[in-house]
Image (cartoon, rainbow, N blue to C red; front, side, top):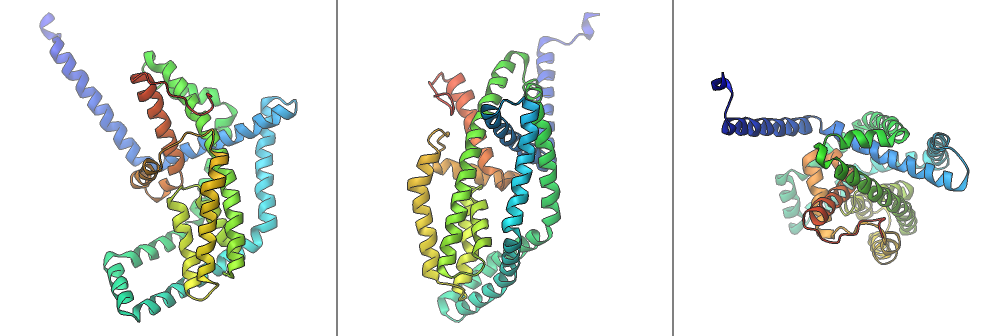
Length: 346
């Protein structure tokens, strides 16, 4: 009878095969469901935002958490509606004008570059590398993806409400995925990541508002067409650190090169804004935030874009902060025993 029982070596081999199969299966699931995973992560960010608003309300007004959370949802919706009512119509008009002007202005810039020998070589190199095709595809995606953006936003918003309503339930369920011996550590890590992301979201929102206002005012001073739309684009681009603000400069520079406003004024605007951001805004609002080295931050953002595609870039900053916090908690503190201080612990 014992002949049918596998030996220790066979059982160990089978266990390793099962682990490899599970790892491969998880990899396939992540690859196939990357969009859904990102939506879930975005919903978690939204839940952190709603919970932060609800906590701020309960500190000032004696409200129960369900009432405070309902008030937070209504307050966020009212803010979006109010912003749309105050600035939406003009911003949409300017965005429409921006979408009509950019192809024409880019054609003028191409023609001006093509007239000179150096510019001709640059254009030929860009055409051979497929830059023009990439720009055309990106414009098509932006133009045709409005419905998808609205659908994704609704999914995120509804998911955020569910997550914020019972945060302990979902955090406990996520920690249950870890082996029993490591579940307390997993629960502690989830709490650390949530606290770090709450601080990160706060700083990002402040930075986005300040940068959007400064860019819009600067481009208006420079005489560029559609300054409100470009300022909104510049503010929203701050959600993707380093990569987003760089890409957001391109439309304004193209329009200035085509004669809409002063190129020197545009460049001066972005230069002053970046100096103010680096020496005033960032030091003031990120004092308690986890300090990710800029080079590592950039490559983590690019890695998120490579793994999850263009949609992954929208959450790349939060993903980078999450990964960096997890490494500091699990490796530096728990494995190496280093005295690591995470955001909110000091």
